[in-house]
Image: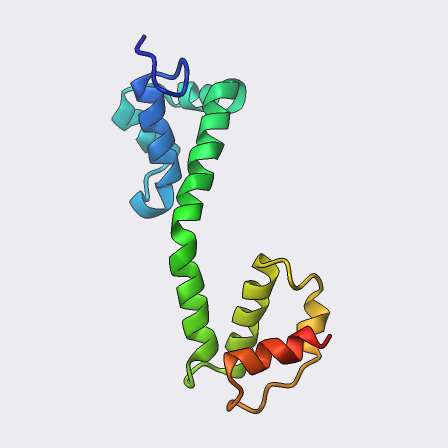
Length: 133
């Protein structure tokens, strides 16, 4: 057994973790991942359910992958919010997501009470109106 930097995970287990994290991009099922790694699907299941180190490393690696995507997510949200072509309901949803992620909005009701028929508002003006609640 080859030991990795994550402790006693093998290279196959580390490959499994990477493949599980990128399932949305690859479109592979867990059965296909197991087949590519030349392991039985129940082995993959067992690692996920019963191997604490595997599970912890999977979570840690997935969280790191998500953190790496955040800048592009924020850029996209800003684009939706500031675009003159964005429908009001879509702009409002983007603002809601942005503020919730920042911990500045705890109740969806706060956002829905504001009328955004005026598409001339800047992003800063929208934030200012939301902050008044």
